[in-house]
Length: 570
Image (spheres, rainbow, N blue to C red):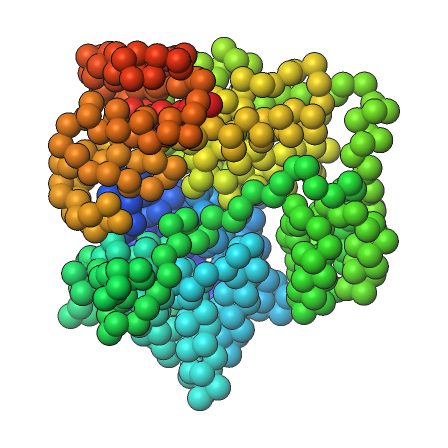
């Protein structure tokens, strides 16, 4: 096999990566810091790659270039297809890894990729992946991507060919993946490695095998480092002597971040007065990075996407001049658009407005549809992709659209879809609804006769003001802050964290509601799951009547999987 990557090799790499994701997606899904089966990183990665390859085949079929497209065409078209098909946060991050590799191939008009070019390509991919996350954190796919890039550069500097560079990258990825529990306490607590990092390892190993044809290794089939996907008791965090801080392997103290480290927080909607948008060319990656840093210090809602020849920039600021100056320093800004929000609202007639909302079950979909939303199915194992959300935005026919992800793992796909919608002239906003009950609360305050900004402010307020909880049944053993969890335990979840462990659904649900109502509340929403016994929901409602007679109770048959009951308190 050649020690370079050509167009045929690139096509083989994509196919092998899809096969690896398909083969190992169940195991990656199980690498979940939450003890219920809604961790679907593996499924998201598989569907991202599978959908992208299908789109690539459709495009090249229409062009008559299936199997004969150049390496530049293959790289460019795959990168765009992956961006639009990306599902979940990890899918978006992996799409940026591929985008970086594609940029090097396209920029250098490569017919084949040797060791040095491969090192440059994976380095660019790691840089783009890290740049795409608002608040990067170690112990994630980003750490694995950085390790791949560093090892690739070292191998290339030593004269390694593409196969040797890829082999060094695989070894580095294995080591970096094994270290993720030491870097991120939430992983150590669950006894797992990072799922996105595992996907990154599979992808780089598929590249190595495409280059070497190594199908008969003693270590087995993709991924040969299979033990890296097995939870290890030694990774579990243990309380420190004073009980105030967890320790991970070797007694190193770590602080616990209970949130998804790749889950970029949604930007607020009540801040700066101006929206500034422009296209930027005559620039480069370094100057764009400096511009991004400058704009990040000026305001919020910052998005810088594109390259290598053209970037699209969007930011909310109070100082318009400083924002435009940052663009001038970075290159040539053009098609500059500045909108003063207050003037826009007062001067324009109410614009045509629509809502796109994600639903995890048929009952929830029906409720959202009746409330006027365009609904996209999105559930564990089948998250909505950026392309599906973009299609829904377009189908509304509205000039402005608000998107309700109703799930934190769909936020990044929603961001990609909204960014793409601007190319169609559609104004969009994402409401930070991370659960179905927050989405319901947000939709309840919509006024379709008003414009996007006024609705977005009201919907955001309603969503974040809704306290949320759930009950579920543990599908595996894991250590949580509430204690050790065994298969079959009833989990009481409050604000996204396991707060209590029980052995009775009703008693656990009642305790969750008591905790949520300890801060007051007037309305309780009960959303029953697909397999929830009506008697269980009746018992919970009866308990509310006895213990919290002052609250109004609304019951909804949501039909969602995984969670027999979702609850919201307003």
